[in-house]
Length: 138
Image (cartoon, rainbow, N blue to C red; front, top):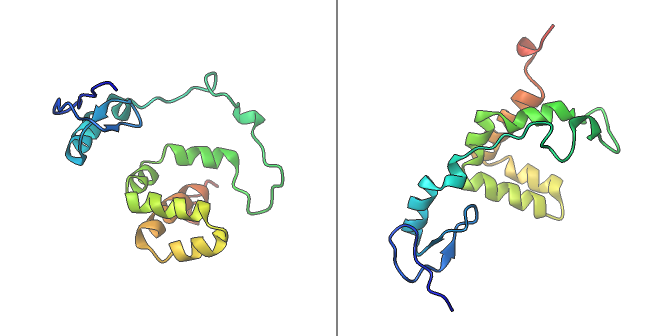
């Protein structure tokens, strides 16, 4: 077994590994310090259409309905600073995970909508997907 050295404090008993850059660290304190300076965390890569494995023109819904959100609107969510800020909250991410794994997602979303932090995310998404009438183009 090799000795793993903490990338922050250089302790020789690093038991944990950063999921983004794979460097090792030994504690929550070191994890937090590393996260603030993680190269993978600070480098934001924006893929061009040529790099994307699936072209937007190839993406479509199998069973669209009148409530189906257009693909281009979903793409806009990716670049929303408001949505990104909401997703920084671990409680929001936990709620999303629980909705995705629940046997009854409709009930899980109704339960999630009681949480103000989740409502904030939902509102941020709706501003993009379904803007208020005064913001809609003519």
